[in-house]
Image 1 (spheres, one colour):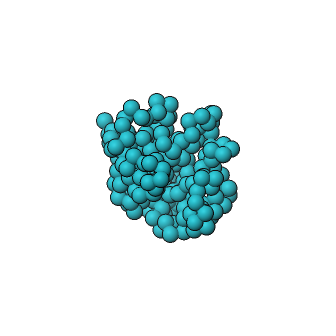
Image 2 (cartoon, helix red, strand yellow):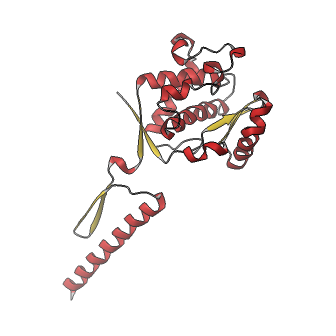
Image 3 (tube, one colour):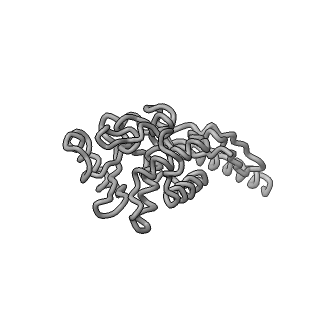
Length: 225
Protein backbone atom coordinates (compact mmCIF):
# COMPACT_ATOMS: atom_id res chain seq x y z
CA UNK A 1 0.00 0.00 0.00
CA UNK A 2 2.81 2.40 0.94
CA UNK A 3 4.69 1.56 -2.26
CA UNK A 4 1.62 2.29 -4.39
CA UNK A 5 1.14 5.62 -2.62
CA UNK A 6 4.76 6.60 -3.25
CA UNK A 7 4.40 5.65 -6.93
CA UNK A 8 1.18 7.66 -7.22
CA UNK A 9 2.73 10.68 -5.45
CA UNK A 10 5.71 10.59 -7.77
CA UNK A 11 3.46 10.62 -10.85
CA UNK A 12 1.39 13.43 -9.40
CA UNK A 13 4.54 15.51 -8.76
CA UNK A 14 5.63 15.06 -12.38
CA UNK A 15 2.25 16.25 -13.60
CA UNK A 16 2.44 19.36 -11.39
CA UNK A 17 5.97 20.12 -12.59
CA UNK A 18 4.96 19.76 -16.22
CA UNK A 19 1.99 22.06 -15.66
CA UNK A 20 4.29 24.63 -14.06
CA UNK A 21 6.58 24.62 -17.08
CA UNK A 22 3.62 25.05 -19.42
CA UNK A 23 2.35 27.92 -17.29
CA UNK A 24 5.72 29.67 -17.41
CA UNK A 25 5.81 29.42 -21.19
CA UNK A 26 2.24 30.68 -21.46
CA UNK A 27 2.91 33.70 -19.27
CA UNK A 28 5.96 34.75 -21.26
CA UNK A 29 4.18 34.08 -24.53
CA UNK A 30 7.17 32.30 -26.03
CA UNK A 31 8.98 28.99 -25.96
CA UNK A 32 11.77 28.94 -23.38
CA UNK A 33 13.75 26.33 -25.32
CA UNK A 34 14.50 24.74 -21.95
CA UNK A 35 15.84 21.29 -21.29
CA UNK A 36 13.56 19.72 -18.70
CA UNK A 37 14.25 16.46 -16.90
CA UNK A 38 12.65 14.78 -13.91
CA UNK A 39 14.60 12.81 -11.30
CA UNK A 40 12.73 10.64 -8.83
CA UNK A 41 9.65 12.80 -9.06
CA UNK A 42 11.66 16.08 -8.64
CA UNK A 43 11.34 18.69 -11.38
CA UNK A 44 14.73 20.02 -12.47
CA UNK A 45 14.22 22.84 -14.91
CA UNK A 46 17.36 23.83 -16.78
CA UNK A 47 16.63 27.03 -18.64
CA UNK A 48 18.87 27.37 -21.66
CA UNK A 49 20.46 30.69 -22.56
CA UNK A 50 17.77 31.10 -25.21
CA UNK A 51 15.12 31.67 -22.52
CA UNK A 52 15.29 35.36 -23.42
CA UNK A 53 16.80 37.17 -26.38
CA UNK A 54 20.33 38.38 -25.74
CA UNK A 55 21.85 41.79 -26.45
CA UNK A 56 25.65 41.62 -26.27
CA UNK A 57 27.53 44.85 -25.69
CA UNK A 58 31.14 45.39 -26.67
CA UNK A 59 33.42 47.78 -24.82
CA UNK A 60 33.09 50.19 -27.73
CA UNK A 61 29.30 49.98 -27.50
CA UNK A 62 29.54 51.04 -23.87
CA UNK A 63 31.81 53.97 -24.74
CA UNK A 64 29.28 55.08 -27.37
CA UNK A 65 26.45 54.83 -24.84
CA UNK A 66 28.42 56.97 -22.41
CA UNK A 67 28.93 59.62 -25.09
CA UNK A 68 25.23 59.86 -25.87
CA UNK A 69 24.26 59.83 -22.19
CA UNK A 70 26.75 62.63 -21.52
CA UNK A 71 24.99 64.81 -24.08
CA UNK A 72 21.44 63.85 -23.08
CA UNK A 73 21.49 63.73 -19.28
CA UNK A 74 21.29 66.90 -17.20
CA UNK A 75 24.30 66.46 -14.94
CA UNK A 76 23.16 69.01 -12.35
CA UNK A 77 20.19 66.82 -11.39
CA UNK A 78 20.23 65.53 -7.84
CA UNK A 79 19.83 61.90 -6.80
CA UNK A 80 17.72 59.93 -7.62
CA UNK A 81 16.57 62.04 -10.58
CA UNK A 82 20.07 62.01 -12.08
CA UNK A 83 20.43 58.22 -11.91
CA UNK A 84 16.91 57.68 -13.22
CA UNK A 85 17.57 59.90 -16.22
CA UNK A 86 20.81 58.04 -17.02
CA UNK A 87 18.96 54.73 -16.82
CA UNK A 88 16.22 55.98 -19.12
CA UNK A 89 18.66 57.11 -21.81
CA UNK A 90 20.67 53.88 -21.59
CA UNK A 91 17.60 51.66 -21.73
CA UNK A 92 16.16 53.55 -24.69
CA UNK A 93 19.41 52.92 -26.61
CA UNK A 94 19.35 49.24 -25.63
CA UNK A 95 15.68 48.86 -26.63
CA UNK A 96 16.29 50.52 -29.97
CA UNK A 97 19.27 48.29 -30.65
CA UNK A 98 17.39 45.12 -29.73
CA UNK A 99 14.40 46.17 -31.84
CA UNK A 100 16.50 45.85 -34.99
CA UNK A 101 14.72 48.78 -36.60
CA UNK A 102 17.74 51.07 -36.56
CA UNK A 103 20.41 48.41 -36.97
CA UNK A 104 23.46 47.95 -34.75
CA UNK A 105 24.05 50.11 -31.68
CA UNK A 106 26.38 52.37 -33.65
CA UNK A 107 23.54 53.09 -36.07
CA UNK A 108 21.17 53.76 -33.19
CA UNK A 109 23.36 56.40 -31.56
CA UNK A 110 24.23 58.02 -34.91
CA UNK A 111 20.66 58.10 -36.24
CA UNK A 112 19.79 61.46 -37.75
CA UNK A 113 17.92 63.88 -35.49
CA UNK A 114 17.55 61.36 -32.67
CA UNK A 115 20.17 62.53 -30.18
CA UNK A 116 20.54 66.25 -30.74
CA UNK A 117 24.20 66.78 -29.86
CA UNK A 118 25.31 63.76 -31.85
CA UNK A 119 23.50 64.02 -35.17
CA UNK A 120 20.87 66.66 -34.62
CA UNK A 121 20.07 69.77 -36.66
CA UNK A 122 23.07 71.74 -37.88
CA UNK A 123 21.83 74.76 -35.96
CA UNK A 124 22.81 72.90 -32.78
CA UNK A 125 26.35 72.29 -34.06
CA UNK A 126 26.29 68.52 -33.40
CA UNK A 127 29.38 66.33 -33.43
CA UNK A 128 28.07 64.52 -36.50
CA UNK A 129 28.66 61.05 -35.02
CA UNK A 130 29.77 59.48 -31.76
CA UNK A 131 33.16 58.76 -33.32
CA UNK A 132 33.73 62.51 -33.72
CA UNK A 133 32.99 63.14 -30.06
CA UNK A 134 36.29 62.80 -28.15
CA UNK A 135 36.47 60.38 -25.24
CA UNK A 136 37.70 63.22 -23.03
CA UNK A 137 34.28 64.85 -23.44
CA UNK A 138 32.60 61.98 -21.59
CA UNK A 139 31.34 63.00 -18.16
CA UNK A 140 32.97 60.88 -15.44
CA UNK A 141 29.80 61.20 -13.36
CA UNK A 142 27.63 59.92 -16.20
CA UNK A 143 30.14 57.21 -17.16
CA UNK A 144 30.19 55.81 -13.63
CA UNK A 145 26.39 55.56 -13.52
CA UNK A 146 26.24 54.00 -17.00
CA UNK A 147 28.69 51.31 -15.86
CA UNK A 148 26.74 50.68 -12.68
CA UNK A 149 23.43 50.44 -14.48
CA UNK A 150 24.72 48.15 -17.24
CA UNK A 151 26.14 45.80 -14.61
CA UNK A 152 22.72 45.72 -12.98
CA UNK A 153 21.04 45.03 -16.32
CA UNK A 154 23.54 42.22 -16.91
CA UNK A 155 22.52 40.73 -13.56
CA UNK A 156 18.89 40.67 -14.66
CA UNK A 157 17.44 43.99 -13.53
CA UNK A 158 14.69 44.93 -16.01
CA UNK A 159 14.59 48.01 -18.21
CA UNK A 160 13.71 51.22 -16.38
CA UNK A 161 11.46 52.25 -19.28
CA UNK A 162 9.89 48.93 -20.20
CA UNK A 163 10.03 48.24 -23.93
CA UNK A 164 9.65 51.88 -24.97
CA UNK A 165 11.58 53.43 -27.84
CA UNK A 166 11.09 57.19 -27.50
CA UNK A 167 11.55 60.00 -25.03
CA UNK A 168 11.49 63.76 -25.15
CA UNK A 169 11.46 66.90 -23.07
CA UNK A 170 8.45 68.87 -24.31
CA UNK A 171 10.05 72.15 -23.20
CA UNK A 172 12.77 71.71 -25.79
CA UNK A 173 10.89 69.94 -28.57
CA UNK A 174 9.56 71.45 -31.77
CA UNK A 175 5.84 72.04 -32.15
CA UNK A 176 5.76 69.69 -35.14
CA UNK A 177 7.32 66.90 -33.06
CA UNK A 178 4.93 67.52 -30.22
CA UNK A 179 1.91 67.44 -32.51
CA UNK A 180 3.15 64.42 -34.42
CA UNK A 181 4.11 62.12 -31.54
CA UNK A 182 5.41 64.06 -28.57
CA UNK A 183 2.22 64.76 -26.65
CA UNK A 184 1.20 61.13 -27.07
CA UNK A 185 4.49 60.01 -25.49
CA UNK A 186 4.07 62.53 -22.66
CA UNK A 187 0.59 61.13 -21.95
CA UNK A 188 1.95 57.57 -21.98
CA UNK A 189 4.73 58.51 -19.55
CA UNK A 190 2.37 60.21 -17.13
CA UNK A 191 0.25 57.08 -17.08
CA UNK A 192 3.11 54.55 -16.85
CA UNK A 193 5.35 56.55 -14.54
CA UNK A 194 8.28 56.49 -16.97
CA UNK A 195 9.18 60.10 -16.19
CA UNK A 196 12.90 60.62 -15.63
CA UNK A 197 14.44 63.79 -14.22
CA UNK A 198 12.97 66.79 -12.44
CA UNK A 199 11.55 70.22 -13.16
CA UNK A 200 12.55 71.58 -16.54
CA UNK A 201 15.04 68.71 -16.99
CA UNK A 202 12.49 65.95 -17.44
CA UNK A 203 12.37 63.16 -20.01
CA UNK A 204 9.03 61.52 -20.81
CA UNK A 205 9.34 57.95 -22.11
CA UNK A 206 6.88 56.17 -24.38
CA UNK A 207 6.59 54.95 -27.97
CA UNK A 208 5.28 56.78 -30.99
CA UNK A 209 2.47 55.05 -32.86
CA UNK A 210 4.61 54.26 -35.90
CA UNK A 211 7.26 52.50 -33.78
CA UNK A 212 5.00 50.32 -31.62
CA UNK A 213 5.50 47.37 -33.97
CA UNK A 214 9.25 47.51 -33.33
CA UNK A 215 9.07 47.20 -29.56
CA UNK A 216 11.52 44.49 -28.46
CA UNK A 217 10.59 41.39 -26.54
CA UNK A 218 12.28 40.73 -23.19
CA UNK A 219 16.04 40.39 -23.49
CA UNK A 220 19.14 39.84 -21.39
CA UNK A 221 22.15 42.14 -21.48
CA UNK A 222 25.57 40.53 -21.80
CA UNK A 223 28.78 42.53 -21.49
CA UNK A 224 31.77 41.23 -23.41
CA UNK A 225 35.02 40.81 -21.47
